[in-house]
Length: 291
Picture (spheres, rainbow, N blue to C red):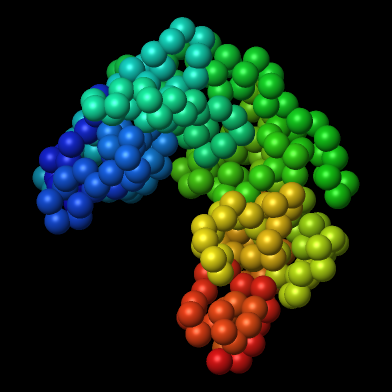
C-alpha cells in the first residue's frame, strides 16, 4: 500500500482528496478540487506515522516500510501551503486552478493536525506565526463561554460537530498539548460533556435522546450529509460520536455502546418505515424500530 502511495500524483508533496484505487490517478472531489488536499494528507500521514512506529523491527521489510513512510512525510511542502507571511495554511492547491479554492485552515477544526505536522516537519516546516496568526487568528478562536454548565475554551458555540475532538487526536495525545489558547485535554472533555448534556436536555424533543443515546457529528442523514451539532440538531445521532469519545467520557461512551447494541438487535434504523426501506442500515437514527 505504501509503495502504491509513492506512485500517486502529489502536489508539492500533498495527496489529492480522492484517488482511483486501481490506477492511483486523481479523482477530483469537486470542479476546482483536483490537486493537493492538505488536511486529508495530514489525516493519511498520521496513520502512516502510527504504522511506522509500530513496525519497529530490524528485518528488511520493516526497515523499508519505515523509510518509505518517512519519505512521504518529509516530501510534503507544508510551507508551500502557507503562501503569505503570517497567514494561514491553505487547504487546497491545484496546478490548474492554483489557489482559487481559497479555503484557509483556521481554528477550531480538524485542520489542527496539519499545523502540528507542519510545525514539527524536518523539512518544509512553517513558521510559528502561521499558527498564531493563521490558525488561532491572534486569539480569535478563543471562546470561554459556558454551555450546559461546561466551559468551552476555544471554538464555535457548543463546540460544533464532535468529530472535531476526534480527527486530529487519533495520534496526537491532547493530555500533552497546552498552548496560550487552551489545554487541549480540557477542550475535548468539555466538548464531549456539552454533547452529552445536550442529549439529556433534548431541547428539540427528538425521539430517543437520553444519557445513553448522545453525540452529534458529521454524518449521512436521511436526506444528505450534514454537520450535526447541538446548535445544528436535526435529530441524527451518529454512533461514531459517542463511541469515539471513550477517552474523554468513558462511562457515557460505554453506556452508548451497550445501548446501541441493544437497539433492534444491534441495528440502527431511521425514524419511519418508509425511510427505513430506502435507507437500510442507516448510519444516523432518530428512533429504533424492528425491521
